[in-house]
Length: 466
Ligand code: ARG
Image 1 (cartoon, rainbow, N blue to C red):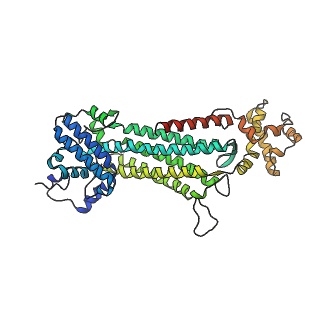
Image 2 (cartoon, rainbow, N blue to C red):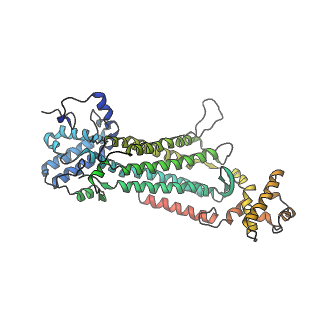
Image 3 (cartoon, rainbow, N blue to C red):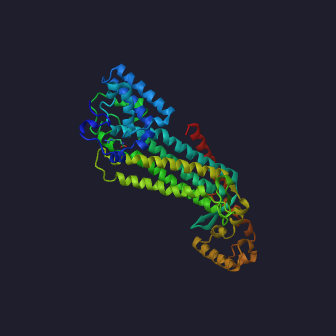
């Protein structure tokens, strides 16, 4: 009787070194693929039966034992443990313990190289939806805040210097736009994962009459991979997922940074809810935005997973290499980090309180300089000339500690005869946003349409179940 401790023991005279075996084993983390491994194995048993490799009785016995193993694992997650090398070895060991030689037939014509690819594709198919759902929740929270902000104004920034008045809703929807792109990127990663690799064997394909199209359909895949060698080493669907995740974290860290600034004493545009802030152990007055800082921090870790993983893939010889096992820890940690970050940020966004008195009071003054220049342009002054005239006004006003609103009609006239008596009517925050005309602008009607579009987008995703 050969030693069956490992899936591959037959060829070896000596047992593996304990420490080295542990080092290369993946069961500690790939136990997450338990459900997927069982699902793939049930379908493989049926495919072997259809190919005439297993009898109906054998395939039935294997399938019902696999289902029993799955039930046991679902009921008691501690069952999914042991000294096995990986999840594939664990499931097969369980099967053989239950069925003996019949269980030993399941791996006919199949390799762990394609099995792990299948499991990961199945895993992403069921898990990416949750990331997308969480993103939809964040977008809905931003849209909700945008709706309640109405036409309230705040400054928009360039170079972190006050630039022009915009609707608060416009700022919130700017972040939503980035998250909508991230949502689509996860959709594309899901589409990349949607190719069925079984039938690839270890690298050259399988010699049994497996109907791969039927197997793909049975497992809910839209297509079969096109090349067995590529299939053994293709993890582009992992790279794309990590890339979508990294960009999501880049975007979420930027939203976090905006909120950290805007809820600070210096800005005071929003008030952070007590429920999503933390205090200081020493300074009794502090209300810190810890969750937002942590989200900002975690973005580094997720981007690191993408970069580390691409380095792992770079220069790999074709076919399967054990390096590929590194995909899982990067992926699982990324998934947890993104999900936690998106949910925490949604909670923060959903509970911030707008301090419109403060935002409105600073969305004026020198921020209207472009509007003064536009006023002259509309009366025939070349823009570059208008820019210079208004620059001169700004310089004088700054020196005197005044702003446009304090200019008397004769003072306007002194700068340019085309300025009229009713400048105060044109040069206001609300007039400034009204003057914007393009659909992507902060014009209140454009923002209302943009908000309606985002709300519809959210409703459509939710009715689709994502
Ligand atoms: N644990 C392995 C992985 O994650 C499974 C595939 C092992 N294949 C092999 N030939 N050693 O990639």
